[in-house]
Image 1 (cartoon, rainbow, N blue to C red):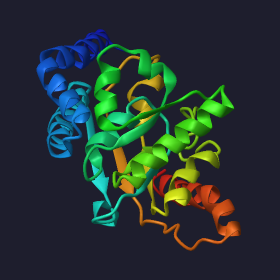
Image 2: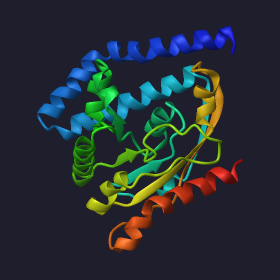
Image 3: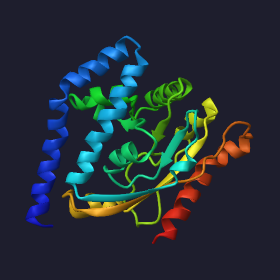
Length: 248
């Protein structure tokens, strides 16, 4: 830990909320478009401003990243991106490294952060209360509706940040995969390597580093048997772990 990294961390926090305040009029424009079901304007706002915002966070944090496999993202149809989860940085990474920013299945606490929660609503995020089974089912249904409307979605099926050794993951919970199975959307696994060393490994002080993001080939869910549906979480987990282990 260095004094410079402590100041870097403070600068990033200031930037995150400073950007939101500076672009409040853009937020209101997006909210008006959402209320009026003006999809073209809403998507233009999301596609332009969210990657700029997240890209700024990564640059200020000293994060370098490589992205492989964008050609694996299905064209012309919604999909469900499934990533391993090691760090808070995984969210901004997914928002800049995919084909465009997509809604994320997020913990309910993020929904209470002023202004940030309003941007997340424009993005199409859905909040889940992991302690409430009924609320969790409702959240998965809402996420499925997002995909059914033709918009892709991102989930971290471990449910929380994995704290174990690099190269492995936590258990992939079955519930998150219901979004893809219910809608027939393909699952696109995403392996994220090195993100925990940017923040959590340094007592929540941002530390520059390099992350590899690999987008793997999609797994079709249409026509899956019940047995294949049951094995889907483990199949995706193994595919991601194989990429993580390959770079250890």
